[in-house]
Length: 474
Image (cartoon, rainbow, N blue to C red; front, side, top):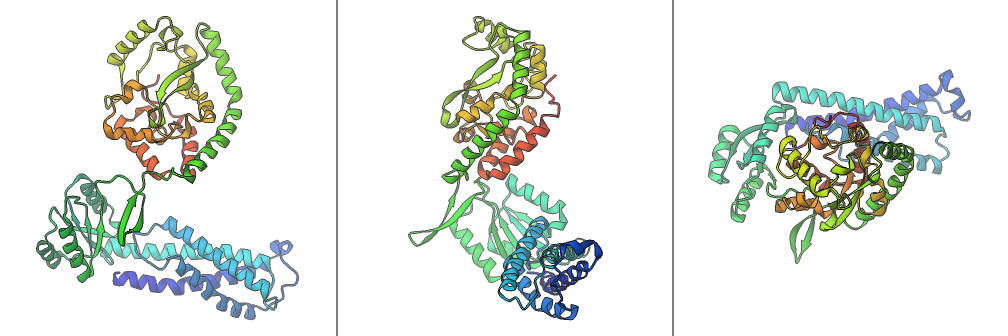
């Protein structure tokens, strides 16, 4: 840790102490204001002097809970939003302990108003004080290079170039890249350290042998250099450390959607899917009526065969937005002509990049009502029944047709390891305007980082994305 980080870590302790006492004092005086008289207990008769003595005795308890949250590590690279959350957790834990203590010792005082308001003010004051301290620390970092971490990057692949660009452009992160090399030679690294100084080494070269890494690690340990390894050949971010036969082993996890994760996601799909089906039921009835009025020859619901989880075929339900004679389905007596016309349109009007998926701009096959319901993705509302049926999830990779899946590269088949979704990361990040490879990367991120909260966020973002006009829809 840098000397400046030690200094700011040390100064944060008395600052937090003062903020806690200030919050307690503020709560005491707020209790006496006329506007709060209806919310306070009449039996509260402790003098301010005794109250301050009590606050000074209690404040160290909150410092301990803050320390247990790891909030006295004053690296400038820490996330302030996580720090705010940590302060709330620490102060809340201290409050719970205080409430139990007050309950057991009635000789203290009993005022719910003072306790609750003191808790809220303590969180506010500590967060504001920490924000100011962090601003001061970052000012010295950016303007004076005080506390900067000199980092050496080992590896010359694309991810390491991106990392160097990130650290170079964002000085407030607290790093200065002293060099980027393609060798783990300890003698060469020694020379760089003597000339430029090294505080951290980040290795992103998967070709290093065990012997090279061991020598480099020993050198870092001896010279108090932080050693970090960047696994460039692995996309997954989820892993667990275990001991296997007396040896440490890292297990990389494909997705949190194993075991209870799958059960929780299915439960969310059923509850939210049922709610959305009821909510959008009237709109679905109106759309069905409009489709039947414009083109009564074909069905209202169009069943499109797609490839789902583990390569299983299933039918996606959609409102039919094309004229029936142009629908590519076995039920259409003009299917042969429809297929030929579709191939012609793909050759002339396909706006999707990547060569696997297609999207036809200004598709002449659409009905008038079809263009409108596709514009707002109302054609996909019947997929809520797919969700309730269990062939789809509310959130996940979008299902593709068999002819599209046949053109997958081997690594693309990772998309088939989970149930496809009505919406997903790609749909809230560009919808069908994205290239297929970008869509794949977003879906892989979702697979690796799934959580119920992420599903909820994507569902809300989907509603907002539907209001934006897609470039390839007119």
